[in-house]
Image 1: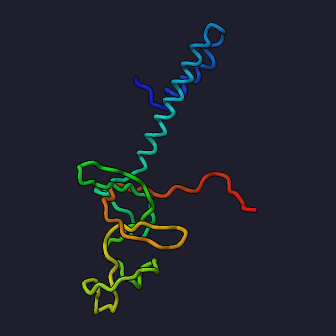
Image 2: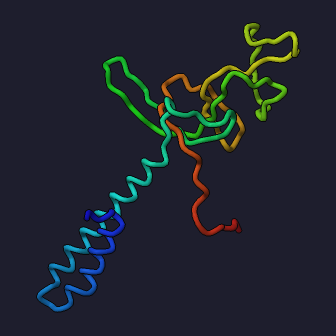
Image 3: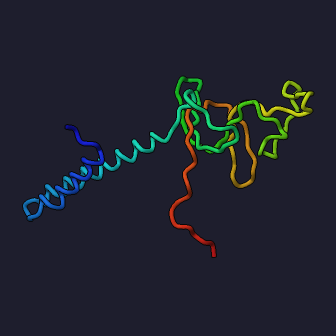
Length: 158
């Protein structure tokens, strides 16, 4: 039966710790520790990729900030990818119902006279946590994931 990646990492560490115990086995120990480190790196990369959700499969809730992968398609056919924070609007939110207070548009096509309100245009918007400003992302958002919690131990500023 095949081992899982976690089992393979554990096995390499055990071999390095218990089976390679004399001076002749130093090379064996080092090789098993190196293999365990490579397997751990592979494990973490797979975990990272698992967090991403393809936009063709599912979109986040409107106005929920997420980390996104943006793909820029260049004229020469090349593609460039980067990540940023953004939020999605599905086109069904009105200004009165939006959690965002900084909308600035008056497109007559988005105005609903029955509600006397404007609909927020559908699309992805890049966000800026420091000054609550955002801009529309006019390239291709191909994947998203929840924003991770901040790093470890809470720090205080003196």
